[in-house]
Image 1 (cartoon, rainbow, N blue to C red):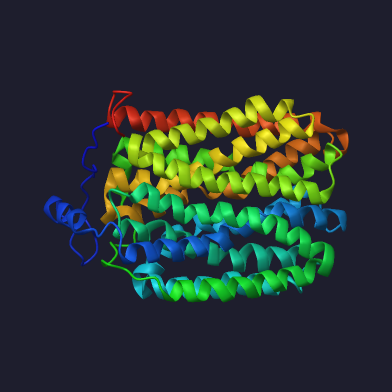
Image 2: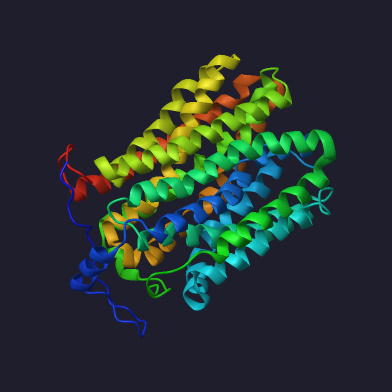
Length: 430
């Protein structure tokens, strides 16, 4: 497939920094190193996402233990994991301002202290739902939100031709982290309990993410960190904004409810943790694989395929997973599609709007994820409770499965609209 130049829309900046012209944008792309220190950036960002995304996707392991302790219902505990993830979207524009004001490196250091510190503080809040919501949901969540924008936008300053692969490796760290953390947390919970699990994870997070943050370096000054309303005059942006927002409603449902579904099948908690680890490891391969696919068929096309993969897994495979074999198959396929969504979104934004505008465009698009991140998994929990809860057997989960799968399918339809605007040819790079 022939690869066209990145498209962009024109807008007037309200910042003293003048907007980039097409000439400067082309010069910027020509000067991208396509490697060098860029691979150090990729490695550091991947190490960061290993912890911040990996721990978010392992919340289901702790959620089961906290449910068994009688702290709260699964739908309520899902709010804690959702709240942390929600700050990726809620704080996107504010975080863009922080990055512009103090730089990526300093922002990442602050994020490391908040995220690691939030985990440690959670060890003294494990008997209080409100306390966990504040420490693990809000404090750690603010750190996650800053980390996401740091790691999601920085590779675009070093790569264009290999941007998809670079972003795939960065977010792939989260999938790998989720796999490792699911098993590690289950091991720690069995041996040292919930409190010390939080402390060990928090200290380890600080030991890795602080040095990684200090190695981050920007090549260019970031663009203005404010809402550019003119983006909404572009139908591609509107469809990407809405499609991404809808896609986040089901994105946490498998990760949060795989352990519970496993127990409804009569599977032990340790085996359930390994199945969740399989989901997260598959997410790693999906993030890297779909990220690399961006460089061959285009990031928008890859994003559509990732969403369709998730939809098929939840609509066709999960409902018939009445034994461990099909359930493992679902976890693998769903994990790959789930991971692909996160690796293709930054590349799609960079492809359409150019590397210079990625931070603000990505921040605005991520803002649309707020409702899905915060309510997506709890809605699935409410649906599950309405149909009798996990005690009612696997059939009680099916309405929640259909809800999640339908949302992924609808999102794929909207993103397909973006592709049709870019090029009507199915075989063209887009």
